Length: 632
Image (cartoon, rainbow, N blue to C red):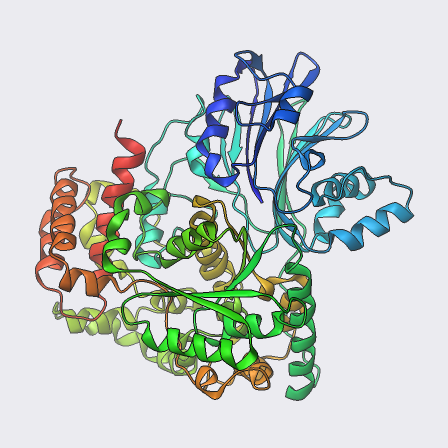
């Protein structure tokens, strides 16, 4: 688990100050080691950095100011093979192939055996070297063989190619900026903004989707010309002519029409989840399970014990999480594992509020509990934490999913929309409901964010006129069934939102989150099950609940779904300093003339609906994002 960065200058050599500053910007992702590789005038050279280990500094000179066409930067968080043999950038024996890699490959031992049987000799016990050898053996076909989370850069001097690749569901981030001058990439946007080719500019199309979905829909970001590499894809840059091509190496399987019993599906899911947990528990550092008190994470903790009897578990306690904390403690006693509760006080939650919001590289609609969860893991020396994230998307866990069948019926009455003339809040909500013409709109409605009509009223007309408000390029297959919703959940709720937030939260404190529900085999199996097995329209996560029955106490099984985040409305209502913080930032935002000040005042002064605070918080976080990344 690490941070990577790099650039390829198309027309000239540029100063290595660029890669040094890019690498420094993601130091929090890898405090254990630093590595650099530069290529100029047909020659590649490895360097150490000021944060490299003493042994690496003995092996490679510390990089000073020099020029290069290509530069790779690396920050290491040592998880597997803690020795210097796992140092990156890693080179092939003939120094023609160079790799930087962020992530974990859970099937690397199996791949290692296969590669050894094909005649490869490996010098380390790291998964990085396995990827390098796999690429040498299978080329780009190697990416489909990797089971895990990854963002990879490979420079292949022998074939004059530079390749960027990302895992199947985007668990590891990889951003890039392409211009006439060159290509710049990194694990976080913070790194890209340190390169001389990249100048921060607002991407209003990205901001618009952020306001509607609580996250910016990939591959867009809120920065102009900065994109995220799509999950399950790789991008190839020809070093001879700078031609860029993109390819997918995996697509989500379609549901099968075969008959299969629920019992058989549950048995197989149980088996595949056990295999995934066993693989993901492997590390050369302490591992813990973060339990929220719900089914997803508690099941992982229960099934971890046979593979690690001394597994550590912990729960974050915050306002209104009492039931979750009680159930987590009960479950830990039920299957006999070590369990600790970290209570986050109001003061602690608000302590680094501005800094934590600005750590996210786009506006956001919540306080992120996961930052506190990562800090606690760091303080307890847990470098690896298993998470239940991904189960809701994979198994249909969100309550909005249960409204799907009703919507499929009600959409037949969308013709009434033009006949709603009144402008009151209720009428606008009704009009919004009858504006859901397709599955993409239904998914958008489930995100509890701004409605399109609200965003249009908010954004100044001269800016709004340049926004592609139809969003047709984000549409997927549009299947009129659960499969269509599932596709959007995996693509946008999971890839664009949850694992992206997880990564930023965890890596702020140099912690690695792992996701047993997101193994290749489990995703493939569940996605290919017949729809009637996976979704019944009555209860969420029916298959996972059945799987969990033999492991978990009844209280956990029957607990209603609840989001894992601080209750922002609670802080707005009870903390004057939060209200003052909001007013201060809204006043600053109104002066920028991006948004209609009267709309902002109206939202702030007339909060009636349960989720009216979401829009306010999105505006506050927009202002803080703008301050951080656009004001010098």
